[in-house]
Image (cartoon, rainbow, N blue to C red; front, top):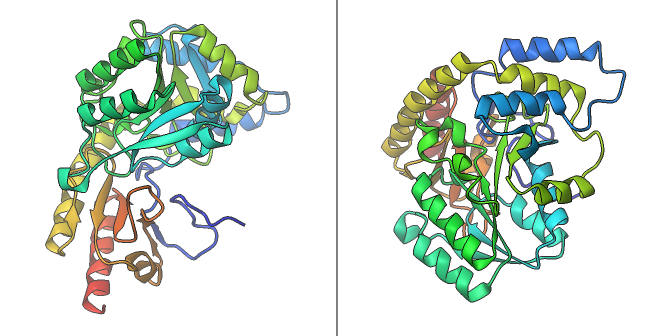
Length: 350
């Protein structure tokens, strides 16, 4: 069996504190849990394969027509639908970034190249470098993660809009992954979602899974103003891919506005606390804007912490990175204090 390459592997090893998966530390909202429990009693029939009610709720929440929304069994499901449905011959990524893009594209037969983010520039995105790479490679699809995973750095809406305009002129279909965008302090400053009418060549990807701690439920969604794109995705997706439980959970989650604001306050404060703690221990830490931190240290740190039943995400399998780089999620203050104490003990005994 292929080695598990993502965060969240709490099944093959004993873990008390999981810092490897970027899930909301507040846990699933009670309203969402109750909606899923109620849905169990009505789950005998097949679910609505078109997710009509959920898409209607999303349309009301975002002020975008339901005919421009598609739902999937997590964001990864939609990534694979995009790759198989649109079948690009060449695709451009940035690296390091989420590995699922490349996996889906290669499975669909695409040639994939990456615009490398340079450590000497703090892994910051360079639109100039990206455009040059696109002009040299001539892709017909590109993926852009905003905020980026694993660095947590986000580009303002103006930069992404410039990317979209460039892609339109070059005949490139641009997928903007905003799955962690709701964790940002001011999400609207970074989201291109409000511009999709201007750019039918753009697909915006979002998910319930991380913000509402619903990763095990599996629910992603996306927006595109080009109906032909959504039709192409529908042709390759499995029917009934979104369960009745997931749809009910998603509808309930959209009502949890106070929970979202509470989450942002917690993440803002604890991200700073955790970052300062890592720096005091001598780690190089990047200024993430999301609910996770990217840092570098000694190889083998993951294994040492696992001996203490703490799981962190090694970034060794990200293109452009190696075993010196790690990503951890932001959790509650009590958990973060324990994590830093255990990390300090590891460093004292190395």
